[in-house]
Image (tube, rainbow, N blue to C red; front, side, top):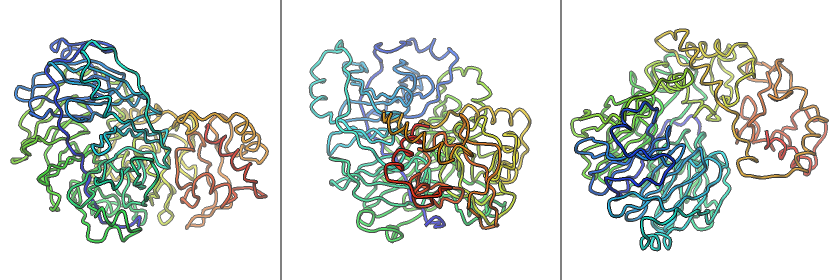
Length: 606
C-alpha cells in the first residue's frame, strides 16, 4: 500500500453565509477603524476564508492575530476588523446566517450571527486541546470539531440554539457552551466531511495515512483504512466519490535526484474513491474504479498542498503552499493550470459562479483574487503592513518552501508535517547509505537532543539541516549561513508535542508513579535518560537494519504518546504497547498487564 502511486482529490466544500459590512465590538481588542488597522504593522497569517451568499463580502480568519476581517469583494476594501481570540484557524458557515470559527491556541470555538448589518458573537464553546478544524453537518444540525493533540472529535447540536439565538437582541451576553459529545479517536484528526445519506463522518489523520469513518450520532468507528497518502489536507464529496488531497512518500524510493525529478519519491495527489467501496471493502479494493490526479509535474512538483475547493461544476482549486501556486483543474481531468499567487497559500474558495478563486496567502498577509478562466491573478488584497519577523518566523517560511528541493517536489514539512512527522519510512542518506529506510523523526522538542539521525552521526543541528537539504532534498541552491540559522531557530522553537494525558486531561497519579518506578527499575532510563529522555551514545538494542547496522541513538521519549501508530527506526512496533509487549524491548521478562498499563500511563505524560 505504501508504494501505490494512485491518488485522489480532496476538496473543501464552500458553504455560503450571510454577514455584513460591520463587525461588532464584543472582542478582546476592537479595531474597527479599517484605515488604522491596515497601517498597523502585524503578522496576520490569513488561514481560512468564507464568502457570503451574494459573494459581495469575504470573511478572513487570521491565525496570527485572532482577527476576523470583512472585505468588499468588488473594491477589495477592508470594511471591518475585530480581534476575537489569540488565533483563529478555521472558519465555517452553519445554516442560514450563522458562522463558527475555532482557535487552536485558546482551545475554543466561537459562534457568530449576522443580523441587522452586524456580525455578533453569541456563544463560545470550550473544546479539548487544539481544535484545528470545523465541519457543519446539515443532516444532524451539528458542529463537529477536530481536536489535534487531544485526538478527539467533539460535536454540539445547534439546531434549537440557533432558533433561540435568532430571537435575541444584539446586546445579549456571549453564552458559554460545552460540546454535547466527546469521542476519543486513534489518530490526530484535522480534515472532516460528512458522506451524506447517513453514511458517516470521514475523518483524516493530520500527519499519517489513516482515515476513519465514524457514526456521527455515537462516534463509533464504522470502518477505518490505511490510506494511500499522508498529510491529508482535504476531503469532499462529489457525486459518488470521496475526493481527497494528500502527499505520499514512497519508502521504496531512494532520495536521489532522478527519483525526485519524476515524482517517484514524493507525490502530491488528488484521489477519488467510490464511497460505497470505502464503506464495504478493505485494502486495495477500495481504489477499484477510482482515479488519481497528480498535483505536480517534473519541473513543478506541487510540494505541500494545503487545501482544496471543489465547485459544484466539478472545477477544482488546490492551494499549493510549498510552491506559492494555485492549481486549477477538473475532478475528471489529469492536468492543471498553475497560477503564481502569494507566499504560502493556505486556503482557497470558489465564487458561487465558478469564475473566481480567492486565495489566502499565509506568509505575506495578502489575498489573491484569481480569474479562473484565464488562470491569472486579477487583483491582490493587502491586509496591511507586516511587522519585522523573527529569525524563527523566517525559518518557518523556509521550512515550508519548495525552493529547497529539486523541481519543487517537497518541503521540509512534506515529511515533517507541521514540524512533527508523517510516521513513514524514508530511504535517505541520513544513515550514510541507501537500502535501509528509517522512520521520519518528529522535530518537536528537538532542542538539546543531539546527536541527530537514528545512528547519531551528526553532532550539530545546523549540520544536519545542510545535509538534509543537499543530500535528501537535492536543492539547486546552497543555503546561506543566515538561512541555516533561521531554520535552526525555527526547529529549536518547536515545543515538545503535548503529551496525550495532558491534552485529554487524564490524571492517573498512582499508575503514573508505578510506571515511573518501572521505567527506572527495568533499565529504560539507562538509554532514555535525563529530562530529555535520551542520551548521547549509540546502543545495541537487538535491532538490525537491512545494512546490518545495529547501533542506534535512542530517540527522546518526550511526546512519544503522539508518535503512533508505528515505532522503532523501521516502524516494526505497533505503538508503545507493541514496543513493550510484542517486541519486549530490552526486557528480560514479560510484563504483567498492570505493568504495561502503568508504563503506558507514565509515557503518556512525557
